Length: 265
Image (cartoon, rainbow, N blue to C red; front, side):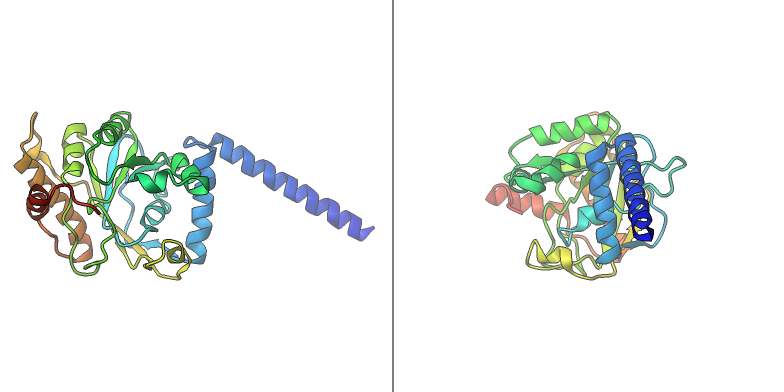
């Protein structure tokens, strides 16, 4: 009899737990898929990278924002999402739609499902397609959060000393949308040559949040290419300063691209 009562109690508890999870997922403003992704990300963070923050998150509770960060690990997008809403007056999950390489977005299976759930924007590496930039602008104008890694790819050359040169697309989006740009520095993110093994490394990752970058000196109806380069360097410096790093001037990247064509990150 005792065993039967215990089994009934366990079954009832599981039923209530499942019902609560379904209810919470259904009521999530970001959608049930994003809710599931976040719960998995929280478990992942607790077990492996154990990501913490050195100060309070500065992401806005409402309205658009461009979240920019250094890029040293494939896990960076997951780390940036950790408890970003903890300081909101009305805590709620906000999706950060990242711009990402198209070959990962279209790989299929679970990865593609996650990318779509997280509202990622696929981008061709050759940089010739303007459609993703226009889609990102539409997202910002609609009040969403956009995630960008301005270095364009994972920094394996000097992750602890110097940021790679930033792409001017981030400045164009910021000036055109007038959305605030929020810098974040990610310290001690898991690193590996394997895109799979990197997610199973134990680390003590940390996030340092900055305040919105002042881009008013370059806020014009038609900013020149020089304006975009200077604004990009301002954004990159805001990230680097949070981690005590140096930047690589965007002019270096622009000159290299002019001579050799689009850069392949």
